[in-house]
Image (cartoon, rainbow, N blue to C red; front, top):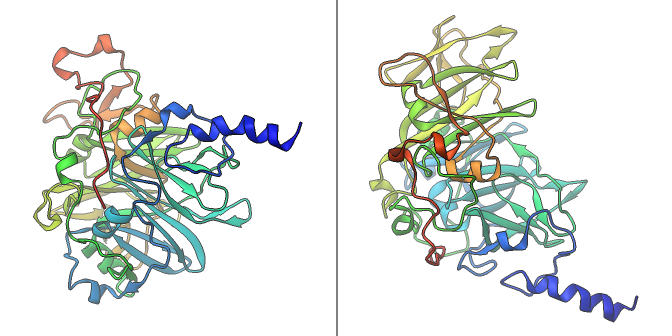
Length: 400
């Protein structure tokens, strides 16, 4: 077959991606191209940070309040905090932590953040904003092959790297004060990004304040709880389970088992919601949570929260939201992260609709919870039916 004919056959596939020209091998893909929706922002229209600069926590305190959220990550003895007030303007940071190439991501449309390794099959990649979304979740592309990647799941969905998987690294969104307490010598992403942006303001406030989902989402039916409520999803041995924000509000040190493996979820409402008010400092407080293994040095600890502070019942050591012991007999120790991720319910369940979701049984009942999802539509009382599907009017990402 001639090269001219091969090019002719490939051209229609390239034409299926908006925001071209693309150099993506679209003969390989794992999702229908129709699922890829233009965000209204051009490819690279939301610029990634490729040469991040950092300041000390003390310097960052001049513009970053203690209750503002940061995405915290620690690797090879080096700790980094990425303020969400910066990430919402860039969504992607190509960085290195302790010499390891990392990809820091935020999908503001569904309130999910994740840190991944940029090493794939022995090669290191750089990532950018594709201008596309799927299930109202950010789609990235790598600059080497221009393969497309799903932010929430970390898998390549189109291009030569299709079905490759990014390795998710431990991270947590916590109030800045928690990072400062845990890593006083850590580094904080600087506002000196090379771009002029209104850091500290939320460009999404008028888009997300209504609680509506901006782009089409594929779910098997309406959710029996608000679809934009955050859920904490834990994973073990191929199994997943989600916990609703309303359940965690009543159980701030929730202990459970998944696939026979124990874990605990620490949660708090001491952090500002960066996607609420136009000025983040004026926002309401929202859920901050992280999951950990309760096993330390071969002993399983049990936890409780008292006056906003986490303690273990065995030694009454004080713990923080990053799983570090800050005072008491175990001071200086830390819990290992249990695999988890947080997102708005609609996004995770669009990709993994079979994930069981736990909700509170009822007020005043101490039992942790019961499954509320998956349920058939017929099982739902009319008052519980979410507005579904989202409005069909065109939506766009906010201007950057």
